[in-house]
Amino acid sequence: QVQLVESGGGSVQAGGSLRLSCAASGYTYSSSYCMGWFRQAPGKERERVATIYTRTGDTYYFDPVKGRFTISQDNAKNTLYLQMNSLKPEDTAIYYCAAVPSTSDYCHINNGNTGAFRYWGQGTQVTVSS
Image (cartoon, rainbow, N blue to C red; front, top):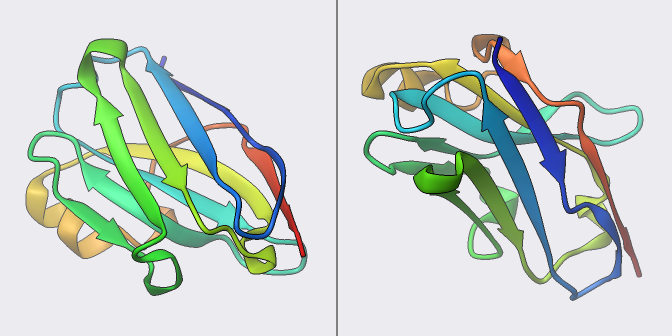
């Protein structure tokens, strides 16, 4: 049973930083997975933040977070990270970790498609005040 557990959310002022973690269990992390961070603000649809293909480390970012957020992985710890810098109030949302077994092409094509991801964490709240 694949399980994803997020942590690291919290409340910060605009311009601050947070690092989210997603601990994965139930499979070998270094296998070929498309893993990503998504977020959902109140009244809005869930949207992609950043995605990584675990075998090659190829990354994909949602335009509003490019240059501010960095997705990374630690295969030894079976953990996915999201470093968030220069946070803005519009980054306020529940952040979810997601994963799906994947080829490189599948991840490239579907990295922004929430319906393409099979496993989801419970989410962690990020609140950015102005």
